[in-house]
Length: 195
Ligand code: GRF
Image 1 (cartoon, rainbow, N blue to C red):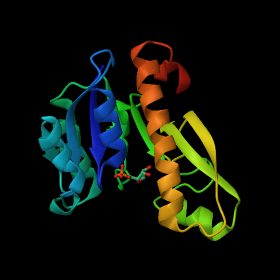
Image 2: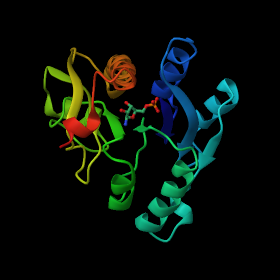
Image 3: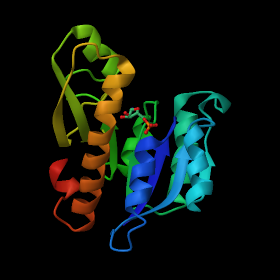
């Protein structure tokens, strides 16, 4: 299974996927890493010997123009699955149309709770005693697509945004790796899920 992973930040979740794919038995390969900015995580391309590309959002007149270039750049790698792993950008409809349902996103909350760019902060602010991690198919909503997998995670007294996020990320990584395995082994059909 050929994967293209898109990031905006440190790419720690991507790192876990790259480490998993070092196992020759792992039925998926990250063939390229893309970003919408000069993301620290692009350094993983150097470390793991994987091509990277950047489509800087700020270099385009609008979201649709950015999306059109992103589609071209991603298509070059002929991925079987595109994973948004900390891409902090809403993709335009053309990107959804081009790749979904083979376009999935990991989110650090128990969707539909706390969608959007600050799921961890919002859960803390809401004072809930549990949140979660979710893996979804990307559609044209904000984190409202079909849920592939999700898991509850406790919010502990004294949690900060970063301590809570650090507890969520390992779960995101596990859900993402399991979903890639299930898709590669045909135990999960995204077309079926997204019908
Ligand atoms: C992840 O929790 C992801 O769900 C959220 O931002 C975080 C990205 O972290 N959108 P990293 O770049 O993988 O370290």
